[in-house]
Amino acid sequence: MVWDIGLQDKIVYLVVGSAAVYLGFPLVSSIKSLFSKTERTETSFGCYEAACSACEVKIDKNQKVLSKRKHG
Image 1 (cartoon, rainbow, N blue to C red):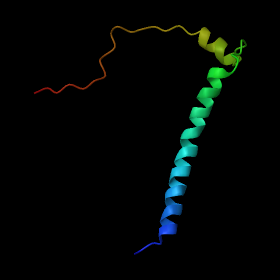
Image 2 (image 1 turned 180 degrees about the horizontal axis):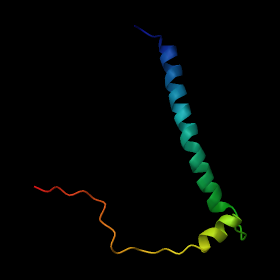
Image 3 (image 1 turned 90 degrees about the vertical axis):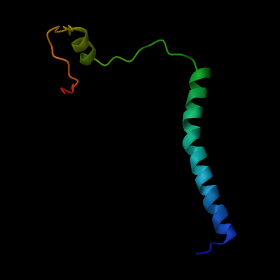
């Protein structure tokens, strides 16, 4: 199957253009975050923060190791 040179060029331009757009958005957002003002206010998640701050983490030292060992 032989394709016309013009069609091949359009396919290459489409692939390169879509890759440029795909990679451009993170680049623009990181540049934007570097030069934008930092906000002093933090987002509050309401009752979720209160629930997490009330939690206490307890470590059980008698808990078995989860990795499997070969007995041979």
